[in-house]
Image 1 (cartoon, rainbow, N blue to C red):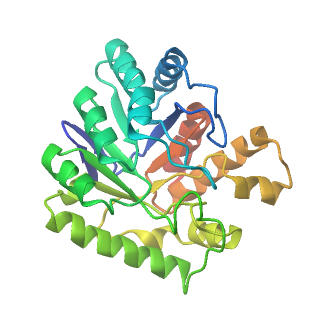
Image 2: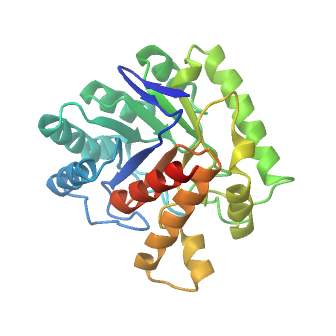
Amino acid sequence: MKWRCKDRVFDLSSKGEIMGIVNVTPDSFSDGGQFDEADAGIDHGLQLLEEGAAIIDIGGESTRPGADDIATDEEIRRVLPVIEGILEKAPDACLSIDTSKAPVARAAIDAGARIINDVTGFRDPAMIELAAATGVGVAVMHMQGTPRTMQSDPSYEDVVADIRSFFEERHATLTAAGIEAEAIVYDPGIGFGKTQEHNLTLLRHLDQLIVSGRPILLGVSRKSFIGRILESDDIADRNWPTVAITAHACAQGVPLHRVHEVKPNLEALRMAEAIR
């Protein structure tokens, strides 16, 4: 099982990888404002690489529930200095751009990003065309609604079957458009248009979401449903439960984990792999 991201290929058949998060935003749910200055974002990305992240995912627009869109130019202004700054100091780093806007993705790829991580699931034909033309890695996420509306009233006939069906449709569409199957991974979008029970059901059945042998990318780090289960409003209390989910997901065959805290999740991943 391989994930091809331009000139970088990750062999995930026996060893998973960690994608570290750098939010260059003033309003992200977990770390908004901590890294919204370029120097802070660069330093944080380099730190996550040192801790063992194989990929750094850089986002300039919050996708927390209720978030508003920002202008394309502003999103580019936020992310480009961080991409350029990290690659200046770590030229071999594999960077991902977390965006749903094709012009932002184009600017990031031109600056050296190797992956597009699109929370809207590549519904924009321009994003599909860009990914096919550049050969970047493609992370396709499921989201019901938009960040502004997604938690208003999420509903599914069968959340596992519905998301698997979405992945199957996306796979047929993207490969028909010229994106190599080996470039694609799928993210069930925990917390994006899902209730707590939807999230837990998906986590119980991650192995059923694998489509055409493509890897699952899981992003649960510090999500609000963890706080509700713990009955805690302290975001720091969500860190170790995130580690627990990483180990659980590894046991179900999930090789890619998008997290805020790299070192403990990487250690949990390697231990779970050793046991498996």
